[in-house]
Amino acid sequence: MARALRVAWTVASIFVVESVVFGLAVLPAFLFWSLIQRWPLPRPEETLLEPVLIAMSLVPAYLVFTVALIVLSSGAMRLCGWRTIPDGAWRLADMEWPLLDWARFMISTHIVRVLVGMFFRGSPIWTLYLRLNGARIGKGVYINSMSISDHNLLEFGDGVVIGEGVHLSGHTVEGGVLKTGHVRLGRGVTVGLGSIVGIGTQVGDHCQIGALSVVPKRSVLAPGGTYVGVPVRRLEMATGEDGGVEV
Image 1 (cartoon, one colour):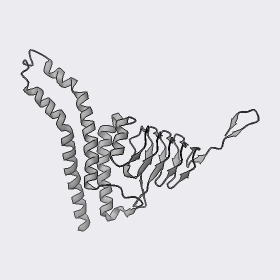
Image 2 (image 1 turned 45 degrees about the vertical axis):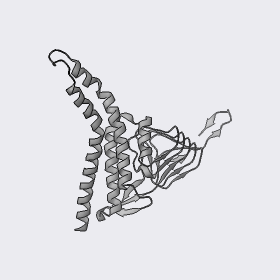
Image 3 (image 1 turned 60 degrees about the horizontal axis):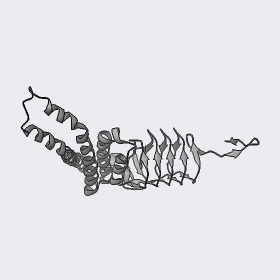
Image 4 (image 1 turned 180 degrees about the vertical axis):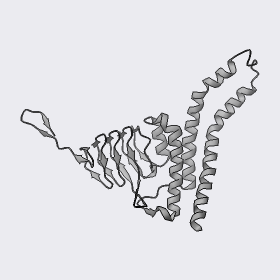
């Protein structure tokens, strides 16, 4: 019975919070379009001014909505205290509060991912959202992937670049148990497209992780190396007799 009540409260609370967040984010565009409707414009059959104004406002209205949504959503998560608790383990079947708080955090993140990340991934706006939502991100960081989650467990140094389709998060599910851990990328790290980075991973400064590679959970990658494969291994560079580079 207690578990059912926890789940019911979780569903109801996320519905209320996201309704308020989404409604407030849409409000500026709604007010602008309402204002246009009240302007003393000529009748529609005499001019196309009204539909032209509305059409031209779509892009700026979406930009305003985007900024409002990422600020309001991240602010709501901080206010409600919904986060991924680090270094934890919870059975999915038990539906304990830390697990449910994580679920609400993930739902909120997914909503922003769909409405904002689709168009702004790889841009400073997407980096700003991750930072506001709890990630510790340095300067000049570019993240061209929407599969980045558990933001409060992520730490990226200056100059990090994450390619398209990279899956990087602070959680994994094993045998019906949710496990969490920090992910730390040092300065100048590049993660190639389609790669997977496991929880608890620490990547040293100026590492290069090749495309379609898998970094197992709790891995420690030494600084300055190039890592590829499934699972990743460090490429050893050597100079051949002819002066060329051998791998």
